[in-house]
Image (cartoon, rainbow, N blue to C red; front, side):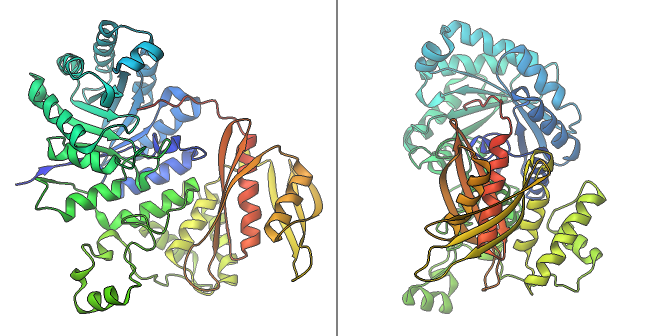
Length: 511
């Protein structure tokens, strides 16, 4: 019988550390519910000490999740651990994840601590976490560049102190698969009390090896992997949950373990996270990309028609990818709308949000004859925006573009409730719109990225626009969706500007 491979999802914590990928409390709750429906074992909901908002978000997730374990991250300070313990009090199943760096470069230059001090601090932290829960995870940060003898010493000590899970992070994505797998094997063999803990890995993708390193660790005895939806995360990201799960599931001949993930929910989670964070999935992304199950080559098409297994090692249906299905239209009622959203895993906290989203659905149905699940996800994502932070709101737009003529854009906004209007020209209609907005706001932001994606097929499809902007070193993402791609662009730009005007004084740990 195969061992169970525990899936620890850190989309809400490490994934949120992607530049501009911050989420509000309602967005985190929605993703957490989707992860629970995916049957993720552990949801790392955030870093409670980072800010009051992070504390409240972790607490809110702990209140609504029942099947998955809810985890909070903490450094080794008493304040961090106490904040995590307090935030997790409502959880039916809680875990505290504490960490301290163990590599020479981190101990010397960042911590300015001796190895003995690090060892003492780690043990003290695990014992303090034991005041709140017996489900404690410890991570030696930058384990991939740590001395293995010192790692063994620290791991043995924290297991004796009460740690039930030992997570070995490749914090900077430095390890090679054979090397990282050997490290896991040696730790399990050399730590005398290793049988009293589950060994876990947390791999970053700086060299594109996060999934490979994680799988190598699993082959050498790790039985928990830390990952994120779509591989979201700091710098080049984390190991992608969907890739890890499907690799283990597909290659049962290699792996002596399996997960309890409901793989048919993978696409739903992927689209939700992409919509909320504003990070589109590239078409050639494994498992969840638009081209993952597409075949253009005539030879490939012929082979798949004759026998799917010739060129497909997985079924699209296994990851929840089906042909777009018409679910609702302009004559659909409120109950059908609400029921379909519930089937997709979306529930509203109050009738006001439900009514506002239903109104937007009706407006979309007047423009677009067929409403698909992806359209509904985009509508719900828009409804989760924190309107209290929206100082700037889009009112209307008029664009004139003609071959051989300079495009012009006339835009009306409200700023703190006051209507403002201006006109501008540009190299194209989108450039004209952005310049018209800036002529009103003079935001001082730099546009780093502009991306357009079609939410569904068809010429009447909603266009989804993502923008990334920078102001004073801070990076934010903005997102907008509309059947009019120019209006979607304006909404995305304004969405990013509102985020840039907000405060973000949170601390982000590295792991």
